[in-house]
Image (cartoon, rainbow over all chains, first blue to last red; front, side):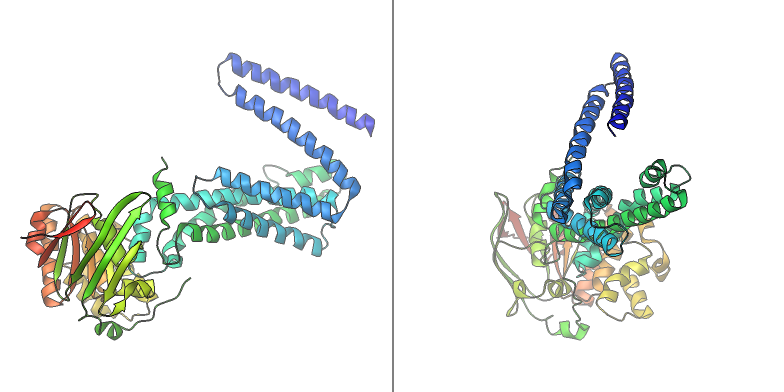
Length: 264
Length: 233
């Protein structure tokens, strides 16, 4: 085990040296991305090694309460990142956190009850992180698209509200468009599955010596779970955001109107 | 949140003879006072014009009447009915607002005309559709034209026809001719006069154009710096 770890560190040092050589080249050629890249590389090393350290502890303890706590922390943090990726409109943290929470919790719970993965940290945390991270991205995409849609169609929506149509009808085409846009990455990934790339779970299992057919089935389960979690998180976040953007009296929330007026 | 306000046209009939009374309406956004203690009334069947420079709060006032914006204080009464305590969708069936920029919905003119009646479960016959499109000065062949392809003047008339199909007691027009050329302005003004005289429609119109106000208005009020004054023609 120690020998294997040392071997990996050797390989890592090799690739890190290559990355820094690339950074030096970019700096010399004044590409102006070297700082960003260097920061991302350093962050990736620190973040991943830290999580690996804690994961080692959590896996060795293997207590469901710790496992669930780690997932809860991931969801809270994912919602925070999703919100920070979204156009600055107040009140969107709640839709993001609830969307990601329900989307990923239902997906993970199903996995445990369907006996795909046992409720053990070794399985649930890596699987949960994939579901949560994807739900985070789709929620951020959905909310961003929704706000842009509403912002550029305010007159259209107001014309419908003025004809005594409720918010649900007036915002329907924009909700549809936003959910569709948020699912495009997940759908594209599914389309290219196996043809262009062999995704993480399947690659990992094959590298670990598993039968490719067995690995493909697990990969399909993971991919479909991610799609389900993405869709659920986006839909819930969008419907909740509707209550932030509009009021119960079927009109625009003035706080929303003021915040988007201040946007460029 | 969603609830279809099922009102038959005849249910709105009895409201048509009631006077609209606005009492002490005030509104401010952040720290800026937009409307200060606004009071006035609108008689059934009249064309009331509210004039004022850009940014004087005209559109805000019109949107408050149909509750697209809620006032900070004051009362809006129709006869003895307090409209601020009624279902907001019901209020918009009585006071229907036509936006300054005529935005078309997806699809044909027919789709545009039928969207709101379908939701309100109003049965609109083909004859009624033809009547309303002809009433706004377009012929029936327009019904199957993609609404987005119309000119601004035609869009403005379709927007008015959409509102007419709900048969509101009050039509609230926000700068209805601000995007129109002189020819289309004349057509729309004649249409407003015709609808007022023939169908006894009550209009509340805001405009920055004093000449237009004089041409159209039975009465003119002037809104300046958040306050309303009588304007002598």
